[in-house]
Image 1: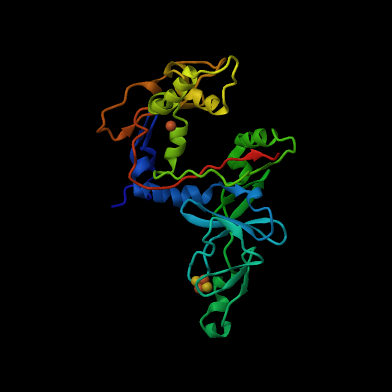
Image 2: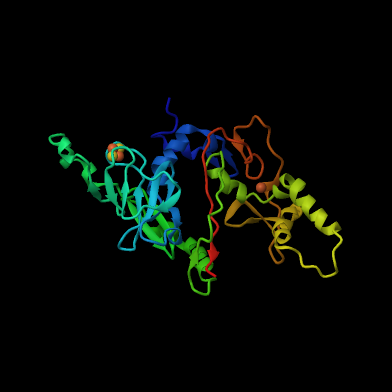
Length: 321
Ligand code: FES
Ligand SMILES: [Fe+2]
């Protein structure tokens, strides 16, 4: 029985000021509603233009559960197409990345498509006579996504044609991209080497949930980070030896819990305090509720492992050298 479809109030009830119901993370129906409404109507990062520098270069990924191809066409523009043959739905590009030359060729019946998605050729086209092919959507070729935006090299797409425009969707958040890109003397970035790709078998929200949970590293990562710091400190080294970059990165993992702070704009989000940051105690670090609870509190139950399996990716971007 459907509990959440067509019942916005039931969905609203999943969120309380200090608690989140577990269905947000594990309910299949909630997940499908997110795919249908959230992922289809919003702007999702697809890739960076430097991942397809030459004509015919492509990069495949997913928006929600929909496979898409980011490809550079002969007009030098980057297009985002559904990675799906308009004939019988076969996936067109199987590899993560590559160069397809001037066209894509479906591996099932060899229909071919220009790199902007337009139908190029159909073998034995006469054989489709009187089947309605010429009047069908299939002759339009591989469908483009609803909208594409290249923001300073970062390619975003919206699956649906209608929806919030790019600028109003991101608002002030775009300044984070500006901040990152403007650090490059050339004012542009590129993906250097194969991106680091994390595969998480969990609900898509758990990655961000975990990354903003900065009270766990000193506990969950103590055995690795703590050991590394211990070894470094006890190591017999010449006076003034510079701390390796890896140690600089890993050291904050062992910052004491008392130095955690929360974001004023996002209660429940925590971070390790740096000098000058305000430290304040909040309800976010109170003890975990009983295991049988269906409600998750920030920093307490959020580490539960949900049953649904989804993936997430992050990519490292380095300034052009
Ligand atoms: S499914 Fe692609 S050509 Fe038939
Ligand atoms: Fe962690």
